Every structure is written in C-alpha cells, then in structure tokens.
Amino acid sequence: MNRRFGFAVLAVAGILVGFAAGTYQKTEAQAPVIAAAATLGARDDSLDELKEIKTQLKEINTLLHSGTIKVVVVLNPDSK
Image 1 (cartoon, rainbow, N blue to C red):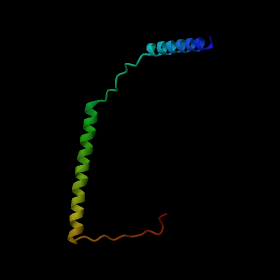
Image 2: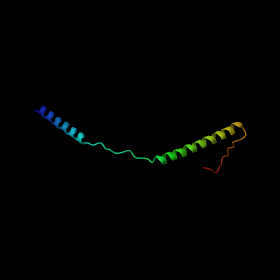
Image 3: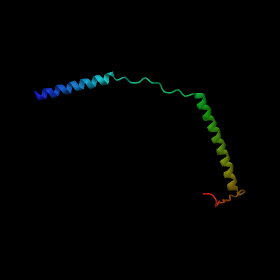
Image 4: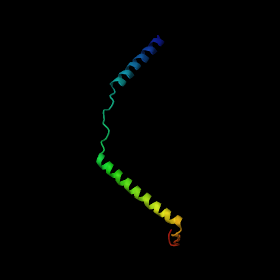
C-alpha cells in the first residue's frame, strides 16, 4: 500500500508540474527600436575622427623618423 501511495503522489506531482509548465506563457516583447539615423550619424562621425587621428599619427611618425623634430621630455617637480 505504501508503494502505491508513493506512486500516486509522484504521479499527481508530475501532473501538477506539467500543468504549471503548460500554462506558463512566454513573453512576446519586441526588441527595442533604435533610431537608425542617429546611430549611423554618430558612427560616421566616429569614423571620420578616427581617420583624422590616423592621418595625424602618420604625419607625426614621418617627422620623428626624418629627424627634423626632436622630443624633449620635461618633468615638472611640482606635479603630484
């Protein structure tokens, strides 16, 4: 009798879990919409700035390799 009772409790628990899982609804939320124009504009601005930085680095590199410019490092004793 004990074994049948345990099986019945297990079966009822399985049915309840199956019922609870069956009534669970997945959300139908949509992904957030990003303003494409603003995003593309900011991306283009960033790309333009990076291209400008790249050009400046090439110019500085050329000057440093040519020897026409010298770099002097000055340490400020007052700075922390």
